Image 1 (cartoon, rainbow, N blue to C red):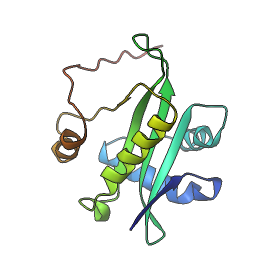
Image 2: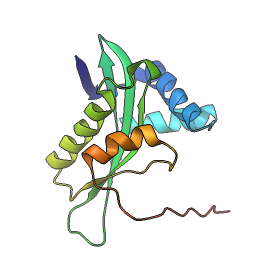
Image 3: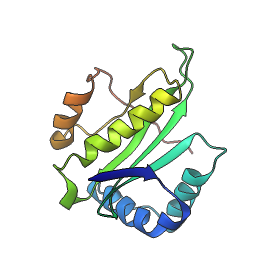
Image 4: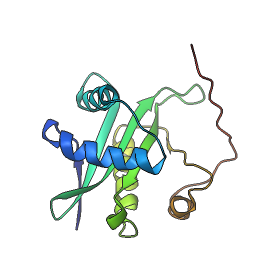
Length: 147
C-alpha cells in the first residue's frame, strides 16, 4: 500500500535523502543552502510550491514537487510537476504513477487548467510511464543562464 501525503517539517532528513537520490540520478549536486531553501519553500504556505512524499510501510520511498503558475493562453493557473523521484527499490511498483496521480488530483482540486512536466530525452524508463498517463508534446526546452 502506497501512502501519499504532503511534506511536513519532520520529514526534512527523509526528504533530503530522496532529494539527494534524485539529484544524483541527474548527475547534479547542490549546496546545503539550496536543500534548506527548497525545503523551506515547500513548507511556506505563502508560496504556490508543494511537496509530497510516497511512503510504503511508513518508509519514504518517493517524492514529487509541483507548483502552480499563470498561463497566458488560459484563464486558470496551470500546474507544473517539477521533480519526481522513486527510490531504486520502489521503481516498477506503481509509486511514480501514484505520485503523478496525486499531483493531478490536487491540480483538479485547485481548478488548474492542466498539468505538465518534462524529462530528459534518454530517460526511457520514465517515458514508458509518462506515455501511458499523458500526451507527449513536440516542444523543446531552451535555457539561458543569467549573470
